[in-house]
Image (tube, rainbow, N blue to C red; front, side):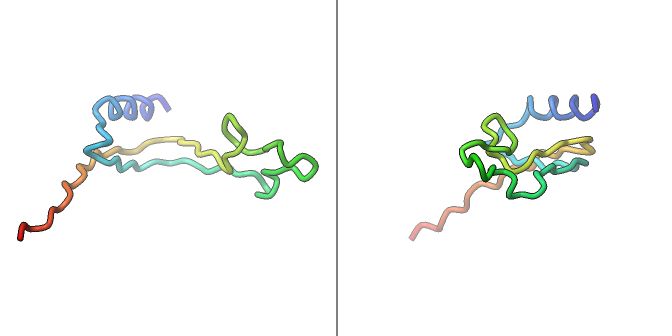
Amino acid sequence: DPASEHLLTKTMALYDPTKEDLLIDLEGLVVTRTPPYALVLPGNPDLRAGFGHLGMAPAEIFIKKIYSIRRIPIPAPRTSPAR
């Protein structure tokens, strides 16, 4: 929905992946092929039937609504005391 897109866009503009993680509460679904072995066609194993531009991903994730996004600072690595 437009509100979720706006929240994600606003958050990503400020997000620094080297200094923080994201904690996202969302509603969505994972879509897979049924049955999973249908990802490879028996008659032509070189032709993939998965998702993605190469057809090799086993599933797609659809985000329907984002309820909240929190930026969590990554703690600095602990250093061992000098001896």
